[in-house]
Image (cartoon, rainbow, N blue to C red; front, side, top):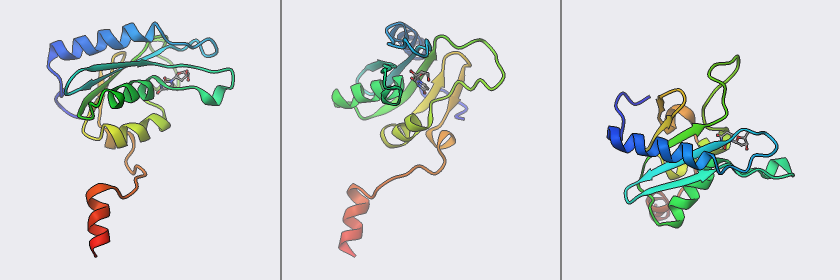
Length: 149
Ligand code: THU
């Protein structure tokens, strides 16, 4: 967990408000568990909510919706991913308010230097702490170096 927030207090407050607000737009008729994500990029704030489907496995998580919005806006310099699990009870046996495995893989690839903050628990995580050995493919520089060998 990073000891210090990558965001200023007002920026963190703004991202938390945005995550909570967008969570109210979640389409979660099956789980009734609304999640909001606010991705803080160099140039702006990008929001996403979970979108479920009658074919349950097709559900899109809030994190991936927000990360897609940041990529679509051309803002790949992501500083923080702020999450609001709106319908989570305050405490509970086996309750872990953290991104799911698929979203961790997305965060590892698209926001490797970001801090991940959970509004409900006020905890910061690093992508590395959430997914220590993330899958990756050789791209860019590594690929060029390999081809030159
Ligand atoms: N969900 C997210 O949006 N993000 C997560 O990291 C965990 C799960 C959503 C998916 C589904 O719509 C609902 O929460 C219950 O799993």
